Length: 311
Image (cartoon, rainbow, N blue to C red):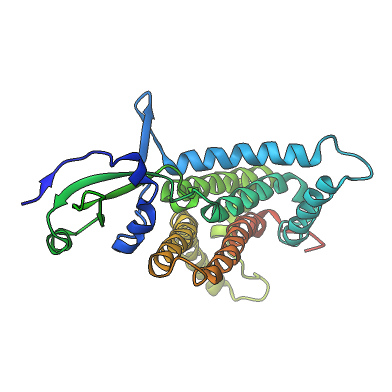
């Protein structure tokens, strides 16, 4: 008979809980764990990681650059090289006229997403915390038979327990709330830049306007095309709104999938074998940060870049 309760295992046992968790097959939780609340608002482990990464980025870049100089220091050269690289990629999409206005948004998204994608590779992220026991069982067979969520491990006292490892740090982008927030920021920025630098008239024409040449199309067909382009515009509106689904789920799925992959590899063989997957995660983290930023740039550039002679 299982005794269901929640408590923390002894401190000495907590340090060795994480590797055993992976062996239990529970994998990474699909949602972030609430660590505490402030004025009734939950603070999760993904939020803590995001805050820490943001502070480290601000402090780190400040220390690298210091006071900008005409002859850059080594740190300033590194930061300027990264900025120039991203700028060269984004400029043909946004156009020379507006790239300086849009670039602060794009570089912020890219750096924040990139470092948070890679944060899961840092020691302590996803492995440091405490184990909460949900149930105790006398035998491993009984524990496995009752397992539906959580991990089965064995304590020093010989009891088989079923529970969850509440780790204090989780990659921010492995939480759908973070990626959804990033998508909302991208969407609001798209609305702002389009209305500010293109205008309502250009947006309405781009969505619903008749793009046919009146001189080359017979009158009746030209009039009928208004209905066609209006229907296409409605489809485009749905496509624009779907960005709030495609952007966050793409980023979340790749980062969360990578976390599960690394957890599974460590659960099977803790040494050597997982190493290639670390390099794979570095590549995927870079690609996903670039994809998110490029898509944001493309969405803005498709409308505000009309008429740019250098496009």
